[in-house]
Length: 412
Image 1 (cartoon, one colour):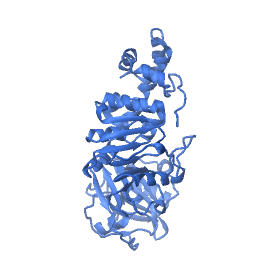
Image 2 (cartoon, helix red, strand yellow):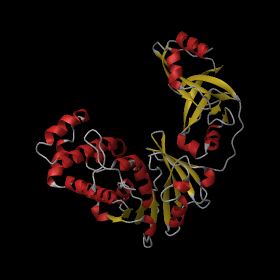
Image 3 (tube, rainbow, N blue to C red):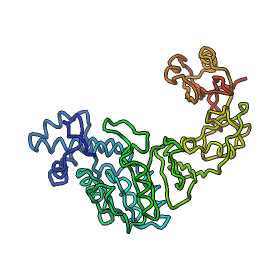
Image 4 (cartoon, rainbow, N blue to C red):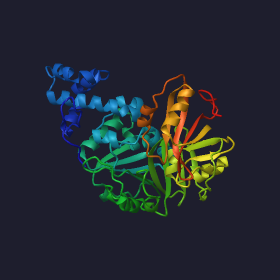
């Protein structure tokens, strides 16, 4: 899908291929260098000044690219300052930590060449090349292909990345060790697509393409229904810093396995096919599983690690009477278990001098920000408040991260 037409300096939109190529020239590079650390609030004044000595289209392209680099820094770190982007590419690209994890896993399988289909701005292709893997990066959009070539050159990886402008469904992947497919998961309006068969290309085509190589990895939305997963695939859900980023279907690895991987540490929990534990009373400790664990339906595996039980059959909180180590959930010590009641909560927190409350919810319709406004917190102490259900009843749990000793007096 082609990106939209460029806007003015205040709306950094993509350059058409000719304007982008101009950015790679001496004058364009000089402009990008001048804009490296400028304040985006000064875009209009800077644009007016630069257009006196440079072509207006080039100035707009440079300002747009500078803005995209700032946005991309969250995903690509220091590399973003040397790379090139389109707005769609920034939005859809894989963040560097996740791409690096996947590239290392492929390289660890002995893969030396990958056909990267729907390559976008090249986040995965660059990570693969850095892992020493030769890459064929394919996209049908001319501007996107130009951006990938520029990125490979900027990072010194051009010798390992071949870029091809083509319809991915027409590409012969024979001769490549592995296939990686990252289909578009947003519609023309920018809205997320949840039906895998509405991806572009659809998941069924990507699965068929996976069968043409020894190994394959297909990037999908983490909210994909488990019933939509191909039976012959390994499914991996990946979080980074606690935020779930994506799911990947692996072919040629471990069919049927469900895995949750937590970055940046790289810990990986493989499901043992355990049934959900029976719910029971709230114990001294509450475990909040990582989002990747929840998406992978591996809460039962965490419960087994900590010898815990569920608070409620429909809620992904685990409770236990003793504190046991797990890398896949955050543990909290619970001081109070109360029926949900705003006035009672406000009085209790005021009595304990709680000025900062971390409000978490699962299975509750209450909005944390609205509740925080109503609590009118004041004081030197902190508290974690869980809004949830216990045996079907709306419940408030108060506590603090395990091992911190809390931020104020404990309950009775």
